[in-house]
Amino acid sequence: MSTVLITGAATGIGRLTAIALARAGHTVHATMRDPDGRNAARAEDLRAQTAGHDLHVLELDVQSQESADAAVRTVLDRSGALDAVVHNAAHLLVGYTEAFTPEDIAHLFDVNVLGAQRVNRAVLPHMRARRTGTLLYIGSTTTVVVPPFLGPYVASKSAFDALAQVTAYEAHHFGIETVIVMPGPFTQGTEHFPNAGRAGDDAVTGQYAGLDGLVARNEAATEGLFDPEDDADPAAVAEEVARILALPAGRKPARSVVDFSRAGVEHVNDVMREAQREFVTRLGFGDLLTVHQE
Image (cartoon, rainbow, N blue to C red; front, side, top):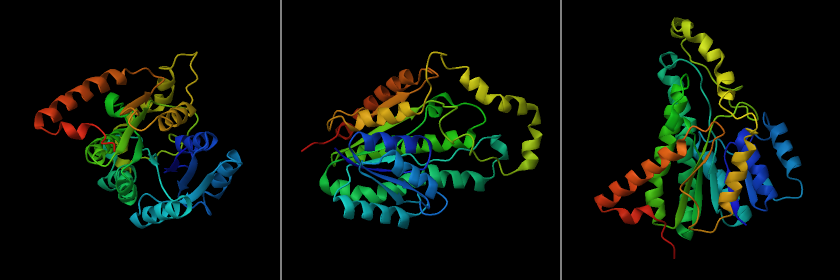
């Protein structure tokens, strides 16, 4: 079994993944901001849900390199090695794109994109030295389907996805695998939408009042995409992460889609993957496409 660090484990998919991995026998370091303060109840819930399993709750604020470095040092001191990182920490903004100030969007990118970069900078020296490891990113099907009223979020997840892909080329040389798990929309089981931020410019937001009805029925419209017989539960994402991390080295998929809306993202991924493979090979960098194993 692996030693795994998960970011954003206080709620939603991060919390469910921490529980699933711990119950599967992994050593889990579930990280969140302020686990002894504002997230104390959530930290205690995680411990209760995984009683008898090897789960530890750690402080990690992805907006701080110092915090990321400290969390990774704690993991290494406690477990001796770190086999996998699940990049899950993210925030959601909902609203009209023009109404988001540059500061609103910069803050979102700091969490959703630079947060993963900070954690990678903390963990990659260890993985490179061992010449093994897995970087697993919780991406989003929104990067393909681009739904309305989520402009800054879609942009940030697209940047997150691109950063993961380009980092993978370089990490492959050191035996480090990359997986991007792409959840579709979920209207229940997470705090993503209830805790979503809004645009900072109320005056501009007011200019789009004619679209407010569409925004108001967004959740119902999303639920209408699901087959009534399906259980659109985000626990399915946690189960897929657990399945992937149990696969042998070199056998993990580059991408996996968990989408109850059936948006056809898998087909787009296949076409994109083939185009990338052909282009990178023509550049003469085909060796970067596969993980080097010793």
